[in-house]
Image: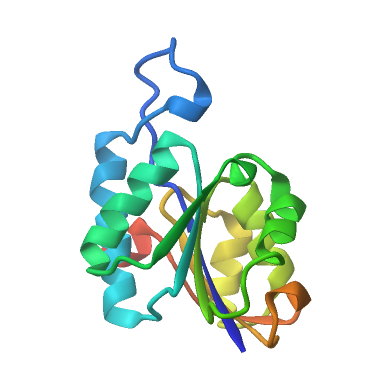
Length: 171
């Protein structure tokens, strides 16, 4: 079995209209949310063996803050191909992941992560699946167990273990 953790980048800053989308940093709200998601992951697991992260500034900053709170430094690969690739594009990249990694944390964007999570997580926590179907907000984190031995086999049939957002953590 493989475990996939999907973390959408935290809230980005739109204050500078001259910045290219790829270069937008995190907003204050994002800088608050990202470490909280890392802390949730530290408390509830699992610990990632490998991180795949979009090269966009907001994704890289989200990852840095989350890993600091997680207290871990797993191998990290930054991949421009995860930037607005679509759910199918992200799945294609995930299928090329080395099988030595049992748990992968993938930091990316929407609608890509929502499309991927909905495609893969066909069973699991019903309330979490309903929330995921409604909205995958910034800093949203999904944990999906996949009934596969190799990442190349990744497809529908996964079990949604958890879907946490900054709002669900406040309650």
